[in-house]
Each structure stands twice: as C-alpha cells, then as structure tokens.
Length: 508
Image (tube, rainbow, N blue to C red; front, side, top):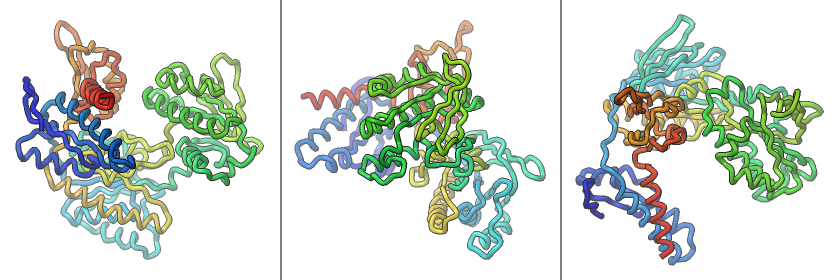
C-alpha cells in the first residue's frame, strides 16, 4: 500500500498474485468495503507470467519485481472513479429456437422473468419426433411468461445495457419490446452454407485467415500430411481482401488494418517454413492499410512477398479445380486473372441468418471463420453488457454440450436481472478537452452512437461522450488525430508509466 501526496491523495494497492480475471472482482470488492477506491487497485499476474514460465527462482523474481514496479508507477497515476449504474429490465431476449435456446428460456421463465424467443423463417421449428427439444418447446409454449415469435426478423436493437429496445418484424406485423439481457445461439452450420458468395466448390483451396491459421499451426508443429502442403502441390498463395462495396464504407480502417496485419504475419510465418512458395497480396487502399503495419509489410516485401492494390472488390471463381481471383488492379486496364493453388480471404466473414443480424446490430461481429468467442465464462461486466453467445451444431455431442452451457448462461442472465440496478466498471472513453478541435472523426467511427459534437463557446464544437452508451472499444482513440480521446484507466500517461517502470527496474 502506498500513498500519493497530492490533490489525488488516496491509498493505492498493488497485488502480486495470479491471473486478474480470477480473483480481481472479489479482491476489489473487499478493498472497497475497507474504504479504498477500487480503481486504485492494480493486480499483477506473477504466477502465469513468472513462476510458471521460468525454471529458476532468480529470473522469475526479477521479472515479478519489474512487473510490480510498473504496476506501482501506473497506480500512482490512476484516479478514483465511481462505477456506472444501469436500471435493469426484467425480460430476456433469446435468438435461436434450438435446444440450448429453449432450455435457457425455460430456466429464465421459471425464475419469474419474461422471455422473448425468436427465430427466422425456415428455422425455429423443433423436430417433429419426440426429442428433449420438442418436449421442452411444448412446455415453454404454454408458459405465461414466454412469447415465441417464429418466422421473424430482427430490425433494430437500440438503447443501452439493461434497457435495450428490440424491434422485430413478424408474420403478423412489427413488434417492439424491452429487454435487460440477450442470448444469441449461433448454429455452426449456418456459417458453412454461404461463405463468401463464391462459386468455387473446392473448399480446401479457398480458406479464411482463421482456417489458414489452423493449417499453418499444424505445419509449424511438424504435421506434414496436410493435403494442401504436401510436396509441390502448394507453390503459390494469394491473400485477397474480400470487401464488398456496401461493406467497405461501413468497415472501419483500424479493423481492415488489423485483418491485413494478421494476414501479413501469417505470410511471413509460411515464408519461413516454405521459402519456395510464392505469395501475393491483393488489398484495397494498399498505401493506407500498410502504413499502419509498415514494419510488417516492409519485412514481407524484403522476403519476396508481392503487394498489389485492388481497384474494386474481386470475384472468386473456380477453374480447372483451382481458385481463380478476377480483379481490377490499380494502374491496370481491365480485369486481371490471379491463379493460385490456395486463396486466403482477408477480412471478416458474416454468416447468414437472424443470429448474425442480431450480433451485427449489437456490434459484436463474428470472427473470421464465423465463430464467436466463448463469452459466457467471463464476468457480467465484460459480456458486452448483458449479451451472451452460445455456439451449437446438429451433432448430438455438440448440442448436449451447448445445452449444458445454456444452463449456466441462463443462471447468469437471471442473476443480472434480479439486481434491478447493475453497476459496471467505468472503463469508458473520455474527451481531453484541451486537445479536442471538434473535427468529429471520433463520432463518425463510434458504432454505438456514444459520441456527439456539442457547442462549447464562441461557436466552437467539442466532442462529448455518453458514458451509458460507450462500450470501451477504443475506436475513437485510434481515429482521433489529436490524441484527445482516452480510455479511463488506460490513458497514455498511465500505460507509459507502467512500461517505463518495468524497463527501469530491469535495467537496474
């Protein structure tokens, strides 16, 4: 415990323990009960970061000391804050009328809360034979707290955590309702039906970056039996950024840059393993995207990887059993046919259906291979504020696992709604007004509508953050060219102090 003797005087606590994700919330709660502000508490992971990775005591102790020194320096620059409070609606939205969704709905209605169960046309009907899902669906359909809307679509999800207004279109017309928590059940098969609107039936020669990552990891592990990497079969790879015209305007530059940087890293790893393989990159706005990952792209170019800029979204077809990318390149007249043994598609891939639409409206885009990170085991404060996601498939084993998962998710949803008022850590964006020039870039990139420009004085405008809507994504911080946006608890000053503290300790 250490005191900072200035205008922010208060006790700081730095804890050296295990992963902060495990004990942090209980520890912070106990400290707050003793009068210490929870935002002045730093926890350092010296178990996984030090004890588990160093074979001898000396280097482990030195590293632990450096990490704690950095945490102390950061904590001295933290400020006491109060959590955000949200009123909670006593209703839940469940999207996906499959066994996990139905079981979660039953548990929630039995706890006394209302449930809206939605599914789209062509789905939303349990199997006709006697199955657990069929029996549970009949039980749910007769419950007074359950409203089942089949053959419908989600039009909008608005509002803030705890009070989200959902607008749907049903066969009987539009409907609106308010919910506090949301569960989205993702069928894995949906993402395999329509990957990139291509006409190449050979899925082995057309993969996403996530699928390529699995192949690459196996190759690095010494697995040589992969058909794509056998002998001389793989001689040329094309990395192609697949961005449709209507998506390109809505997808943020930082997101595009992140996808491209990931793909470049993969290309370099492959080049190290197979120097003979020719690798070509075809991306939109080559200069702009590669500028943000210049060190990577320069290293790739020195390794013989060729970069070309696309003038328009490419078409991917299949000829003679190989993928063919037909694209219009900047500086070239007409279309260019790009032949490769393997095409890796750069960029997010959206699966069809009501589940994907809901995640899009909640700004929780699917991963590159159409999957969603397992969020249900994380604390409620980190669940995109009340949104849970479960993956399932038609296989009996996977469905049973998802159904069991649904039980724990439903319990978490009930716990949140029973609180009536939920407190969330105040890790939100803040405007440093002395830096803001009112350009509005932060407001344009904010997907949650949390930032707007307001008049300050003499006609000057300045950005203002609605903390109730802010999801702490950090896009505004990246977009701001003046360094006016900061995330509370993660300001540049605080993070630099932490890094410099570690460096100074290690250099002593």
